[in-house]
Image 1 (cartoon, rainbow, N blue to C red):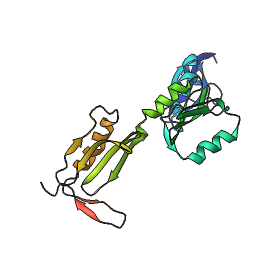
Image 2 (tube, rainbow, N blue to C red):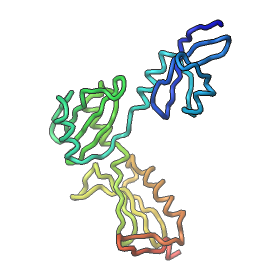
Image 3 (cartoon, one colour):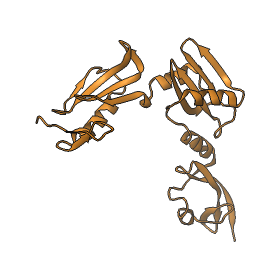
Length: 221
């Protein structure tokens, strides 16, 4: 039997992990320790791929990066008191730190306060306070929608205008037209995508209250 270790690694993007090293046995590529072919590995990891060793760790590391997510204040405080915070920065209306323990490689869990809103985002531990704050200020989770008497209102909860969230657009129930208030909002494409799903339901009943009241979408058309 001829066996040669290969500078490659089997990884599973969906599982966000390295599975095994690779070796060449009598001309066939197999996993280094469990002696399985890539077809065998796919029974457990359908998306398994083979990458160079120097790419494996960086690839898995990048898969652990997340979009900012809104959290509650108690979760922010709980994380702050869990372990000594790293890079704890408090400046005016913004605050950030990350947990000292890494999630994977150099990926850390950042906790961020932007005015009265709190976020968690998993990213590189080298990310600066300014960078992580800007990530949260431009996050998709800042999109806020609410059902009103005339339709659905979309706003950016990270920006205040006249004592309320800044309105981006309003989708009217009667004609299903989307009236845009802030054409320059980075959230506008997300608004249009959500509105399109509702517009496609023309003629259907749409629940507008927790007690079961409904309205016919596009009832004036």
